[in-house]
Image (cartoon, rainbow, N blue to C red; front, side, top):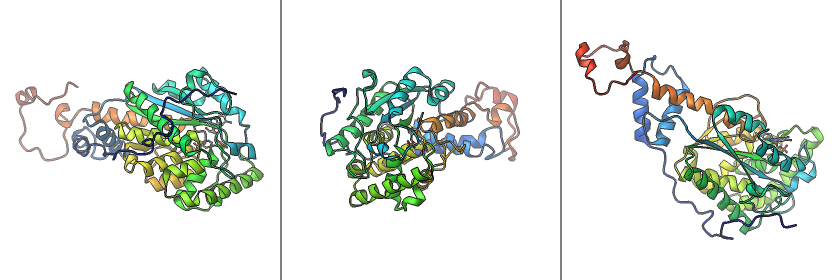
Length: 381
Ligand SMILES: Cc1cc2ncn([C@H]3O[C@H](COP(=O)(O)O)[C@@H](O)[C@H]3O)c2cc1C
Ligand SMILES: O=C(O)c1cccnc1
């Protein structure tokens, strides 16, 4: 069967996994944001974490006040996993391709959430086992990935092509004006490689890390835990080499997400992370491009135990905890309005001086009304 579209990326590009140094968001813009918060008509610190979030956005945009996100984009990375044929998911592998059509038709959770947050959704077939619409398969690397409990997920060449595909997709989105990126994913069985990556990188026992994914029963959990254990054993020799770890124990979709998340940081574009699968890819991205994590915020904490391990490892505090366990980018999207709230307050609130509200601090020199009227910094509130 010849369903794969050729990848536009040079096969075996030696540069795909070599990232330039990541530079952090602007400390000066963050300092401006912190100073501005003190001038706004509210008790000091009263917007809590919204204040530090707003500072992070200002730093990422290198401007204070920051602007509301105008073109947030979700990219759903779709891929099948050989291990899904071994009883580790509550759903059959065929669902992956069926859900790709559902994303295209606008009927998935990610579509419903994106619609009310103003985000665009794009689905990319990185490694779906069956045929998908050619418009979503332009970055396809292969059909399914190897069953990581017994074979490598990918060849070296496929790994590099997958990372390069993720980087190219991030570039396409940023070049089209995206000012906020979200990675989502769809792939039956993908919480198994995600758990392997996280447990391997945090040196955690499989029984502590393995969760119920789509809702497996106890027998399924035992099978999944055995698969995670076997894959971790195969991954052990390469755990310190992120590209090799992706080759042995992930999948083309996860490798592409790692490339996407690292490239977003290089393109100085903020990211909201989603659940356990995206955060597993993020952990590897941080190994590939140290400092990339400064460009990410954790949208939510899913119920998967490995997700908490990954968030702790990356020192990211999730914005919401709603017991979600879906993926697709859904947890990141529910957090997007919180980021917009943080921006709206920092950017649109009046200052004490503008509004004539007492700041609670001793007034240095009471300014007369004429002075205020000519203040060039007075905002038009
Ligand atoms: C209808 C349906 C829609 C989904 N959307 C996301 N997932 C989520 O569930 C899968 C991972 O869980 P596991 O490792 O247990 O298979 C991924 O496809 C993930 O995106 C879905 C799963 C299903 C069944
Ligand atoms: O944490 C997640 O993102 C998740 C959990 C279960 C199934 N799919 C995704």
